[in-house]
Image 1 (cartoon, rainbow, N blue to C red):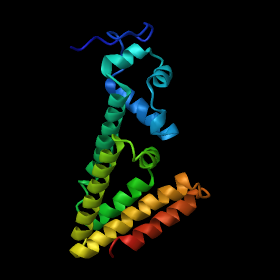
Image 2 (cartoon, rainbow, N blue to C red):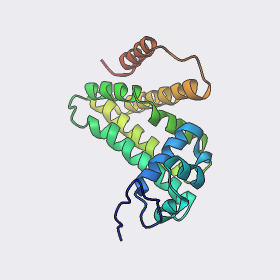
Image 3 (tube, one colour):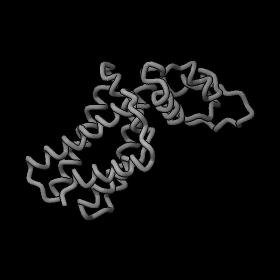
Length: 199
């Protein structure tokens, strides 16, 4: 049964918390981006959100349930914001270029993905990463096929593209290579595009 939203100047309680389950899931994702999967815990998130733990238990039975909801939110939003936005681009080469540009200029989704890769031994993380990675690979293979490559070449190009993406995250976020300037990154991104997308 739904409850009326609490006024901001009222103390929160399990029945009057104005925060939704999606708010908690997003806060958990923000924390994952900052500190990793292991940092997700009820008390620090409640403090961050300015509510009591009762607000949390109104929406979730456990910390694991919150983590699962956060991962599902990341998966759905990533799917809609990246691949959903490209459906209107009819030319496959232009769609690939748009994909590379879109992905290249995001920040937080990459950080979250990198943190999730560090936590692949967590039972909730592994299946999400498996699904997301397979979906990305399938999309790339289909796009390269539509751009004129044969089945085998499209598969290899998709793997090379995805390996370049994951490798760049490793260099930038985990091995902490020197940060590129804006101009350097734009030149690198254009090189990736011209190298990987069939002429």
